Length: 260
Image (cartoon, rainbow, N blue to C red; front, side, top):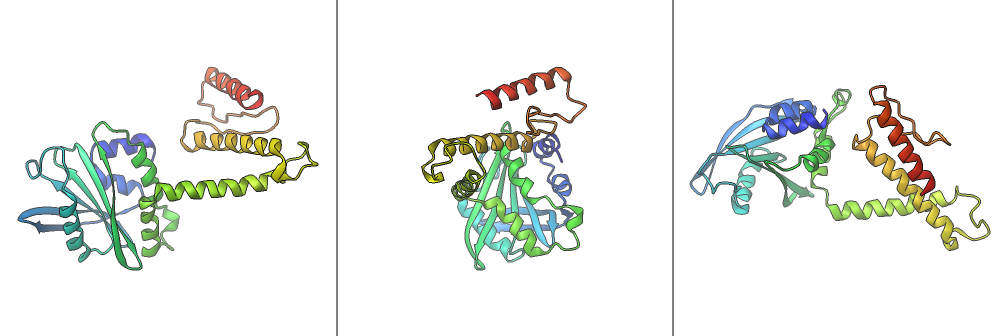
């Protein structure tokens, strides 16, 4: 599923088709849960290995317009739902289709630690949500070996802490940077790597450029294939790309990467 399809599903609040295209299965459920005198209607969206995606649509007038249920209400809903589905992902959405609130309980050693949430509202870019949900795509060739534990592990990536991710990235970068230094020859080779500032600078520069190339390909900003190989540092393998665009970008990449 490409980003345009994803954007349509999100803007239309079409969660069933969204998750079906992410490789999830149809799921039917209908529950009415009372919280402080108010009735919350919970329906099934999809499931994978009995891990359910549930939806709670908030009727107009139930809460102030533009708001979602407060944290106490959501905690009470989670506690009652957890008796039916210990593991689940709950989507709150207003009847007017102006906001979504995704809520996932995070467990450690079988005990609830906290409720993790993220949201989207009308007019907002879908990119952050698109990046999150790419982690819970299931392919057909996984079906025979996929277990509930596998699904839970993948869904829990939605709760990833940005600080932990950043620390992990820089730890891996330092590791790869150190390994890359060993392959670089011809820059003050008499100096040990930990004292060779020029070689360290060069290694950082090249890794940053490689990450940039990876980023634009991963984000589909570049519709062809980028290859670094001698003078042919940019090679677009896509006949649909217009020649003027190809010539311009190839020339720009060459100037940036090889002369900057």
